[in-house]
Length: 383
Ligand SMILES: Cc1cc2nc3c(=O)[nH]c(=O)nc-3n(C[C@H](O)[C@H](O)[C@H](O)COP(=O)(O)OP(=O)(O)OC[C@H]3O[C@@H](n4cnc5c(N)ncnc54)[C@H](O)[C@@H]3O)c2cc1C
Image (cartoon, rainbow, N blue to C red; front, side, top):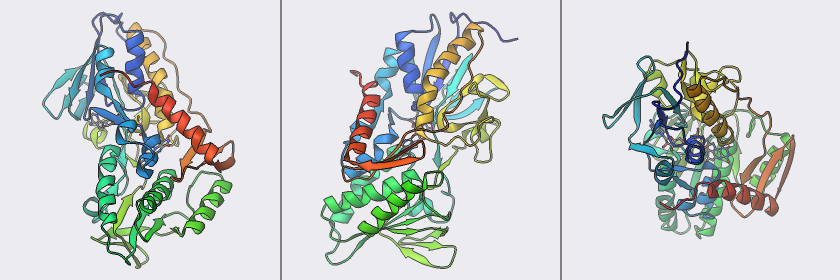
């Protein structure tokens, strides 16, 4: 039988300040859990809103505009903030350990730590590639890349290779190219490598055609059915024996789990993401929730690892944490089958899809910009 806490003595711990937990903090600020103690453990003072990252690469947003500072949000929600990465979750003892030695007992906890990138263990990738996750590190490396490119010798092309032809890879490719062009880098060249037969798996064919048309107009090389075998200092070796020279390499190969869940002996899927019920509770551990990229719902294993799902789960996990503490029934989350997907192309236009249709133009960028700024506006509070 599940104990009833009536909130008065409950210890509630949130791990990670991802897209869902920043909302939990805002909801609990407006309607606190009476008497409960709330702690947020985060490895960073700010979370990054991924929807604006391609715009940051293109130079459309400043770094601060992509950040959600969790410190004022925690303070306003009455949460104690522990700034250190969580290294272990002992779900049987209900104990969370952070790298700084903090040990936090909980009655109910929720994890929203996002994901890392697949394929980082291939030879040379960690040393020579710029991975897109953690996103905070990607942001830090863009300025350095621009400085290198601006100082590039005249008459020599600056060659960028992007590995991964999903939506994030496509956005990174076009926004990097635009930024280099705007910065006056004389001959930026871009190649995008994808292991599958086509870019943008899961997206409508009409969007793929739009991206292909744009790529051919801008001279972006799309190399499909090519898989990277290894990375050397200035070249990517492909499995077919060929190689691609680069001056900058972006690694955008899709989501993979942080090792935390496997290291903690929790149930995981094949990529190491923790497995949850549709109520977002970890399988076999009702007092532990996992939301956003880091959890895989066993009932909906193919839900994409995309920020929109984490955003949608924010209100529901708040409700379920509350219901859990009150001993009430929890609600199940049903991922939406289709969502508005908008790709920033870096030049003031965007491409989008919804219900199998695709569209593009300046108005699509304006729509994306408005949606993103509205979302971010919910978290801009005085620190
Ligand atoms: C370039 C790019 C563009 C993208 N664009 C879009 C888009 O337009 N739309 C979309 O839906 N998706 C997009 N995505 C995917 C999106 O980034 C992820 O799906 C989303 O960030 C996941 O959100 P989350 O809430 O699960 O975690 P995150 O928002 O990643 O937050 C996790 C937080 O947990 C913290 N953390 C990590 N480890 C620990 C730890 N051990 N202890 C404590 N804290 C920890 C991190 O610092 C971070 O603040 C994009 C991805 C990339 C790379």
